[in-house]
Image 1 (cartoon, rainbow, N blue to C red):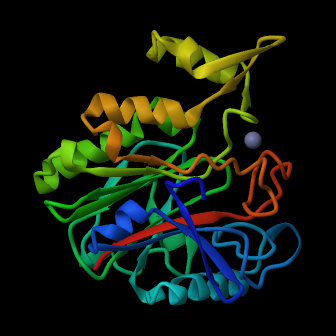
Image 2: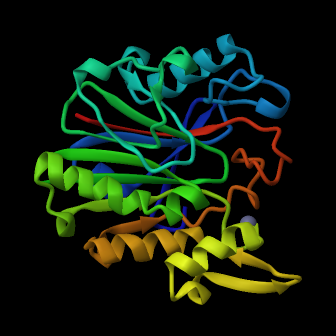
Length: 273
Ligand SMILES: [Zn+2]
């Protein structure tokens, strides 16, 4: 998978991993694809997001299958009620199981989470937004974040790292960062709603867009996140980008744009061994 990410097949199930994360021996992690679940129609097959029109039973079976392939237990999963914000939750054993079987019991208004505990599985859900994964191999701490355009402009990546720094003494230059599949610069058309804030917050905004006429642009969320992580102190060699566009590969991934809003959710999960 273009070097930085690897596609793993486990029976019907297919998921991505970041070999550099695996190589540390410290974490179990995966980013799901559509392959290997029980959902049908718009949600076929591995929809991992609750709170949509897909049946709860299907989603729970999908979550079980996905986690089982990683040798993880659904009881350990922690999920947030994401709202395209930039709030980061500090997760401990107390939050274990929050939102694992019910959307409503997820951590409210949380789009990123960090932990230094074993036995809690951090998770985020997306279908075009960028999943970010963080590993501090020295401090043995991890984080995940859901970075759509709003979260990205709000600096959710640097905020997650800052939280790890504050809570665990994480030294950012030692951190590994993964930027997972999302809608790519090839397909992510944005207008003034996004351009306005982008220009306000990023003087170098032109670096991240390609004009396509009519006030529309293609936006590169991968590069925008990468530059934010570099500015936060992550080393270039420690940033791993999947370069996988969910909209170009809509048979492999759920894509909100490519499927006109009727689609399931992918998930990224990360836990300390
Ligand atoms: Zn694309």
